[in-house]
Length: 316
Ligand SMILES: Nc1ncnc2c1ncn2[C@@H]1O[C@H](COP(=O)(O)OP(=O)(O)OP(=O)(O)O)[C@@H](O)[C@H]1O
Ligand SMILES: N[C@@H](CCO)C(=O)O
Image (cartoon, rainbow, N blue to C red; front, side, top):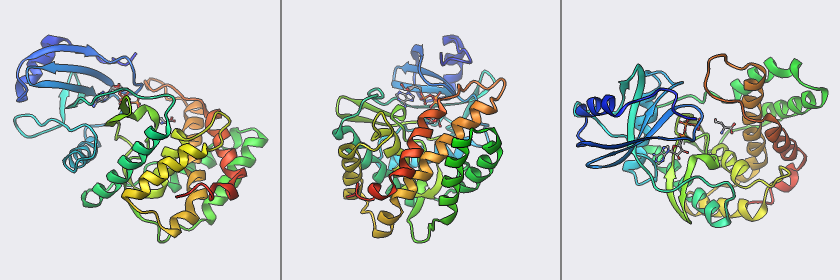
């Protein structure tokens, strides 16, 4: 269930007096999502999504809301935050930071086709290009330093096999050079549950709350590891090439990026294995987010390490 903080129609009608959105017609809690409270809101001017932020503080949120506004202004398919009459897109409702954004069409997919993967590649490249003119900066909270310190916190809790896997991933990270790889604003969590599709038509990308500055190819690797992976953790060649080709058509990938591709796939798998392991071993009492299965990313990481040589052949 994803209404952690209840909002009544009366409370929302009162709150909406600060917004140029007309009269409240309907309010429906959204069942999916695991971190925040989300509602579909219909007013006399349209349909919106209301989010009450359960994890982020009011100080952290302007970067993400400003980024979404910037990307939407640059025709990237993503929610556009609604400003209130005073010009603010971040407010407070029932004690939580709260924002209204435009409602996108569609729903998330579990089993994408090559057409869907190509759409994801295209929108990701468009996002990376539009991000070039976004001036605010955010260090990656799950970047290489975090991966190293988190790996060190976890290592003694792992089985011998997992410890060996972690050691080889961390040592591959320490030996890779990121020099010359294009950097910029990345989404950093472009999984299937963060993209909405209406048939083959993309509604847009949601959930920008891990966005930050980092290597652009790393963002592509995060998406490929989720969108283009077979049951056994190996890469699906057709889906991978579809995503990469569509991306390349919008932002051409370089030879240096080709060389870095196997390692970036490995780093992206390591990041999510570690965050899932961390949530499993150190559950945050009182936090609403539910731990996801670390074994899924253990399998993907193992494949990315075992198949380094063949990964380079899946390219544009
Ligand atoms: N702008 C939007 N337009 C349409 N639907 C949206 C929008 N934002 C969110 N949703 C719907 O709400 C659901 C929950 O949103 P989301 O996945 O962002 O939840 P969360 O709890 O905030 O984050 P997460 O579950 O990733 O931790 C989505 O699956 C989608 O169906
Ligand atoms: N997409 C992440 C959770 C949100 O960051 C995962 O699947 O582990």
